[in-house]
Structure formats: structure tokens, C-alpha cells
Amino acid sequence: MRSRTSTGRHGPGAKEVSSLLRAFRYAILCCCLLGNTQIWARASEIRFAWLSDTHVGGSTGADDLRRVVADINAMHDLDFVLVSGDISEYGSDSQLHEAKSILDSLSIPYHIIPGNHDTKWSASAGETFRKCWGSDRFVFDEGRCRFIGLHQGPRMKMADGYWAPEDLRWLDSLLAALPDRQSPIFFVTHYPVDSSIANWFEVLNLLRKTNVQAILVGHGHRMGIYSYEGIPGVMNRSTLRGLDSVGAYALCRITPDSFVVCERQPGHRTFPPWVRLHLGVRQYGPPPASAPRPDFSLNGQDPRISRIWKVETGWTIASTAASEDGVTIVGDGSGRVRALDLKDGRERWRFDTSAPVYSTPEISDGKVVFGSADSNLWCLSVSTGSVIWRARTGASLVASPRITGGRVFVGGSDGTFRCLDLPSGRIEWEYAEVEGFVECKPLVASGKVIFGAWDGHLYALDAVDGRLCWKWHGERPGVLFSPAACWPVASAGRVYVVAPDRAISSIDIQTGATVWRSTAHQVRETIGISQDGDRLYVRTMRDSVIAFSARDSIPRLLWSINLGFGYDINSAMIIEHRGVLYYPTKNGVLYALDAATGSLRWKYRVAVGAVHTISPAGDRSIVATDLGGTVSLIAGP
Image 1: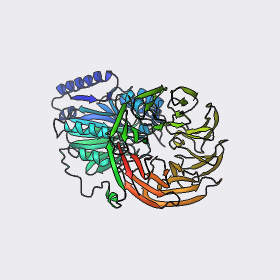
Image 2: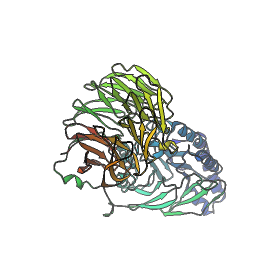
Image 3: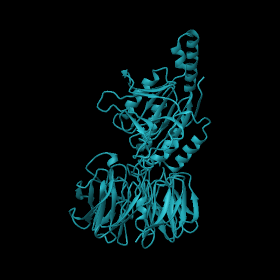
Image 4: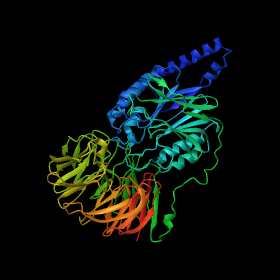
């Protein structure tokens, strides 16, 4: 009988009965047809269905997936199902629950990982996915093969994919514990294992030491064959129908010497194989000399720029640090919040919540306030880390608070925006009609608190009593075009936002009317304002940072600089501090510009992956955090 062990495996209990029935059926057939070598060959085969990019919540996602599941249940020779990410359209709880309900109707086991659509726009910081399926990674054995599934995010931030440090540790320990280094491995992820994942090479370096037969990926919505530094790669199509009348999925077969993949249209036909990979014992050795790796040679070119210290937390960081009173405070994916000494990075204290902390803390009056996916807004003592108060909300809390005038303003994932008294944590008012979750740090200006939500809208509430003053939306409908990731800025009676619709919008702060709107520069989510309110800063999606007048009723360009950073979608904000602009890219390069002219002052590579909005920490020092879980103090001229 086939060996089957699993972690992160899901499906109804009837699946084990189905497995036993299949084994019994094959045993009877073998006894009856002892001379038929094909029957003996079938007993050593592994057959499975492979689904990807189901996008439940999109226009046809749920219906297409139901049709695929019904088709699989009508078959009687499959062992399991793989699902390789982008389960939902934008990671909402309702979409994930609907997808689980559909997939749980499978009559055989299935194994699932999330994709970027499930992790980037997650109101729960990924907690709902883990609660639905028990884990966001898997490992199981089928016959002689081991299947490992691991996603690459990105978690909560628009950026390249990134293998989380906690996931790399898991994979490393898993591979190190293999009883037989020649065990055939199939590795399942969502993104192609190339530069679309910032630290792609870290997983390839681990897999090269094993007998990995193929890397199975999704994301591209099309079928394809690849080579990832010599390791075979196969991309599956989406189950979505697109322009066809029906969607499709992959049927896969592993024999003693081959891996065969066919496209299957539910209820229609199975196409001839489009993949035939020879299987065997593979020895990859070191990566090819031509294989690219991140280049940090930039950092030795200007001796005036230095990293004073670096702390590796070992967990994903998806937020900015708060720096004040001689410390910098930051949370991570383990739920831990650390206070680090600004002088040397020494840990002064740590505090553990019970779920990831992807909220940027805010410090005021000796207190630090932040949200956690454990649904609480926490207030701690900056000096000791002891709890002063906590306020429970109705869902995971991924938004960042803003403190002004002794009050805390923060959005939630429960459709409610709150104002709390800083000393006591008492709720002063609530606005409970937000239609999507909030992740940004709100703006407080002209007596209003202004924030975007993942429902297409920008809200302005009265800062005193929380009543709605106005609600604004851009010209392109759809949740994924919301002005929700940027931190709004204001000057001269206008509020400014940028969104995934590629537009800069200037909005009258009193009425919510659009003053001007420009799509001329292909911007996305990154914005900033000068300390004197004269200049508005934006980053284009390719190479440039631009400054506009923030006081004019038209988009008047002040300066533009091509920095040559290439295509960039990092959702970090632009911060001006003492006449210097700071912007970090998705590839980990921090740029410092002259705020008045835009001229480049210096640049420094902080990390391989996305660096978040910086936190000023002194005259010419800033604290940088990145997806790889490091906190760094950088000093420049």
C-alpha cells in the first residue's frame, strides 16, 4: 500500500475510505490480471489533479472552481489534489471561506498554499487562511515521492515575492531531516522561482542539495515549461474560463521514470500531454556561474554612508519602526514587538502578542500604540514595555494608528474607525460604516481624520465626533484600485492620495471635491509631503521621483529625477527629514535626495527585498526595516 503522511492536509474524512477502496480495487485487478504488466505499472503510479489561480470572489472564480471540483469527483483514479495559490481575488474572509467550502467538497485529499492575492490584501494578516486550512504550507509523502508546498507572499505589502525567514528555516530543517537524500521531491509554490521573488536564490540553494524533480508554480495563468538554474519548472494555468466557455486544470501522472501533465476541461475532454519530464536521480551541484545574485557592491563606494547596526529578528517585518526617546520600536510576523536602543541596537525589552504585528507603531507621551492581528490595539510603556491598556476590536488589526492631541485614531478590519483617549484607552467615538478594511496610517488635518480603505473610498471624518464629512472615490471602480495603502498627505486646504489606478488626486479637504487628477506619470501608492507643505512628492512605477507644487490648483511640476531603479511597486512612503528625501525600493536600495532640487545625495543597498517607509532617528540617521526581518540604523552625510 502507498505510504501517505502529511502536514497541512485537508478534506473530509471520506477521503481515507476512498483511498482504501482504490487500493482494494487495484489489488483485485492485479490478482485477476496477473499477466497484464500495465496493471502492475499502474500500482506504482501517482495520479493527481493540480489547480491554480482559482480567484474565488472574481466574476467567475467560484463557479469555475465548482465545475472543476465536480469533474474531479467524477473520476476514480486520482490520489489527491494540489492547489498552488491565489485561491481568492483579494484575500477577504468571505472569499476564503467560500473557497474552502467548495474545496472541502472534494472526495479526495487536497493540499493548498496561498498566493499573492491571498496575502497582499489580507485584512487578517494571513490569519484567516491559516485558520481555514490549518497552515499556509504543506509537506506529505505519496508513494516514493515527497511533495512540499511553500508560498512566497508578499505579506501585506506591494512588492516582489519574498521567502519569509521563518519559512526558510522550516524548509531547511525539513530537507535536512530527509531520511533518504535521493527521495524524489516535487516543490510547489505560487510565483515562478526567479527574480519575481526577491530572494529566489535562497530556496534554489536549498533545493539544489536534494533530488528535486520539478518545481510546480502558478501565477502566470498559462501553461509553461521553465528551468530555474537547471531545476525543471512547470507553470499551470488558472482554473478561470477567461474568454472560453469553461475553465480548465491539470491532470498529472508520475510513473517510475516520467512526470506527465495534461490539460483537462471539466466535462469536455483531456488534451494530449504537454509536459513529459524524465525522472531520475538528479545531482545539481553549485549554481551556474552565470546565475545572477543580488549585488551589494554599491555600499562600499561612499565612506560617508554606513550601517551603524543591524538586528535580524528572524521573522517577516511588514511595517515601519517608530523611533523616539532613544529607542526604535517595531513588530514582526511572530507577534513580537521589540524596543531597540538607537545607539547600538541592543534590545531593551520585548512584548509578545498572540498574532502577527504588521501595524506601524506610533509613539507619544512615553507611550507606544500599535495594532495586532490578535484583534487588539495595544498601548505599552516606551521605557519598560509594560501594558498600559489594550482595546479589543472585532477583527484582526493591521492598520497603523495616528496620535495627535492626546487621542489615538485608527482604522480596523471590522468596518469600524475609532478614536481613543491616549492616557486611558477609552473609546471617544466610533464610525462603523467603513465598507472595507483599513491598513494605512490616517491623516489628521483641518479638523478631519482622513484615510483610505479597501472598498474604493477615501473617508473624511470629523475629528471631534467621528461623523462623516465626505467620502471620495476615484474614476476606476474595483476594490483593488482603492486609495488604501498610501498615507494621505495635505497642504493648503487639499489632501493628496495616489492609488493602484496610477493617478495622483488632489481633493478639497473641506468638501471632498476633486481639484485635479493626473495619470500622466504612472504612479502607485507612494507619496510624501515636504515639511513646510510646499512640495508634493511621488514615485513613478519606473525609475523616477517627482515633485509637484502642493499649493497650486493645477499639477505644476517642480522637478523630476530619473534614479534608474527600474520597475518599482514598493508601497513605502517618501519621507522628508531635515532637507533630505528618503525613498527605499522593492529591491532594497535606499535613495537620499535633496528635497529642494531632487538631486541624488547618496544611495545604499539595505536589503535584498522591499524596505519599508523609513523612520527618522537623528540628524542624518534613519531606521530602515525590510521584509527579510532586519532592522538597521543607517547614517549618511
